[in-house]
Amino acid sequence: MLIVLKRLGLALLTIVVVSVITFIVIQNVPGDPIYEWAMELVQTSGLDFETAYKIAAQMYGYDPNEPLFHRFVTYVKRLLRGNLGYSMIYRASVNEIIAKALPWTVFVVSISLLLSFSLGVILGTAIAWKRRSLLDPLVTGYASFTAATPDYVTAMLLLLFLAIRLKWFPTRGAYDIGIEPGFSLRFIGNVLHHAALPILSYTLEAVGGWALAMKGAAVSVLGEDYIMAAKARGLRDRRIVTAYLARNSILPLITGLAISFGGMFGGSILIETIFNYPGMGWFFSQALMRKDYGMMQGLFLLTITATILANLLADLLYAKLDPRVRLER
Picture 1 (cartoon, rainbow, N blue to C red):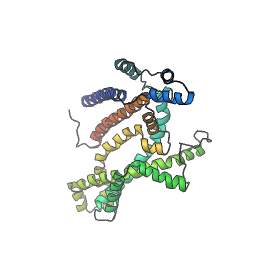
Picture 2: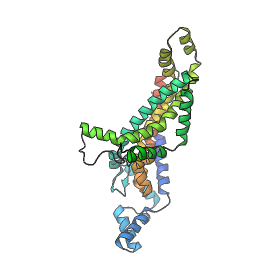
Picture 3: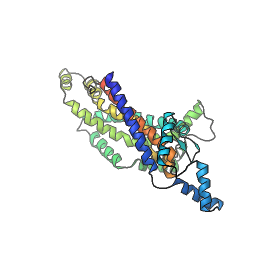
Picture 4: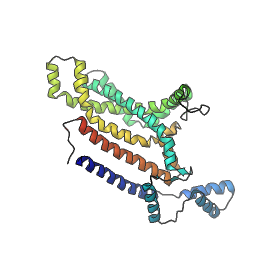
């Protein structure tokens, strides 16, 4: 129990340090968002720049001349109340934006992670057990190709061929505008139809990496005494692979899977932007493009915090799954 509390305290300290670093980095991002919004007012309303700048600052409640220390105090007070900030471009709290965007990202990324992880484990175990088969160079080559190819390239190819040319899938959104949201088969089917290409993009990009990781873990397990003993007892290959090889090889991948689940809170900026999917990644891109400091701070902090907590959970879970591992005191 003491070890768990120690790890939890270290995780909380890391979150505090990260929140301070996030604030400093975001506040020192080059550029002035008020300047860009003021220029839009000058072009659309014909106002002089000084007047447009004052109006933009009042509209968005942002004072670029406010001392950094005062901004930090306000930032800490908001965090202690559970408020992640305020979005200047959407004129809403970051909490409200996250509440709308996070379910879509969790829906798509969790399905993609489970699919890619399961397929990767199966393929990695297969090529480790039969290393001289044709499957080994195929999977290794595919993993190398996807590792060298940016995820947005895969997303763009799927969008171009499957959505635009063949028109099998929609090109944007989480569901059709004319459909009433609810727990109906029509709505659920439409949501799955819109999410199919983002899910496929995530899965195609990640499955090769999981397969290689599983292959590396499985190859190291093949030389263990209990594998040799199982073969000497005349057990079937299928049972050796499932009960001995895969079961023990998958343990090192648990940490990576947990961290991936934590990192999914940030979504994928490029994939969600390409498909105009209203998840966390899409809002990240909007905040970066329009220099929405409030939303950037909130989204970055949420993603980093989720990753830290997922790493903590992975450490604790791994120690429970593998009795050979003990947490350091």
